[in-house]
Image 1: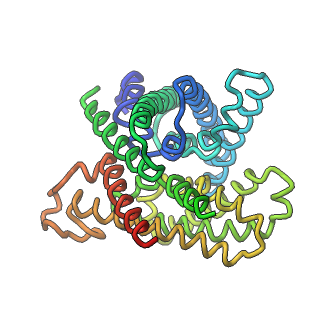
Image 2: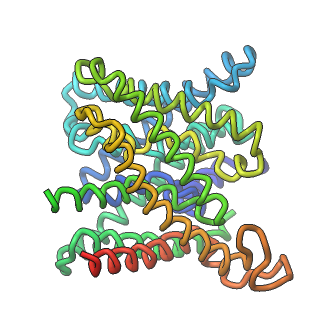
Length: 192
Length: 191
């Protein structure tokens, strides 16, 4: 509670990185190999979706679920809201003909079934942060996700170019790489 | 066909990887395994009943409504009857509703008429992965915390931490990789 906004932001990138600490959003990361441009696009869109869905779920939680005592609808409401926001952003990006609009169809697992996006909404509601803290927290989660996407895909690309591994072996190597990255990131625990 | 099913198996394993976060204790691994099986069985049967509408329209939103309802019900049930287990898997329980394993499998499922055999196949596949998670959970709990199913195994001192790294998230990745490697090796030998 005493954390400053900058420390919340930095902690979410390093020690509490969404992929390395709650282990959310691993499956699309291992499933695909992205180029640096694709990583940036996926990371920015994911951060935008996380922010908008967090704001909406906060509104639903504070103005609908708590006053009307509908806590049993929390899971249902949050998941449907987040999914609809993902679809909304997909439609807007497709309509406005943004570059890399096809990324939604090429890598659907990064958006429709990404645990990091859905999990952020639940993590934020469970925390006792206020609106500003939650926004900074979510931005940190998004940037952390983007940084890890870049690091992991660069390592993966170099490794796959040199070694000719089968898909099952690659999965195992990816897991060990993630474990080692996790160890490195935990080293930042002293940051205040 | 054989190659295709191999890829599908791998996709299922990758789709369920986020749940390795819960392998910090054997009870959590077992609980999330059972929850996913229940969500999977009920949603696949309901999806099959509504397959006429699912094929015509955008099926993902309907699948999400079905699975989110079931995970909400399970969450309520666990919160009331087994709160100690519920608190361990609180974050991941809602996320079972949006697991890519469910979507990939049920999307295939709605095109078939054999409800029982298809569900049974899915349960069989998930049970294997669930077993892997249980082994990972047991190894991590024994060496990371010195307990097994919350009973002291290595040391009677509850404060003792034999191998802290195995209890940490990085241990989850590394132990899962080792257990999966053994699983693939045994599978290849049997083939």
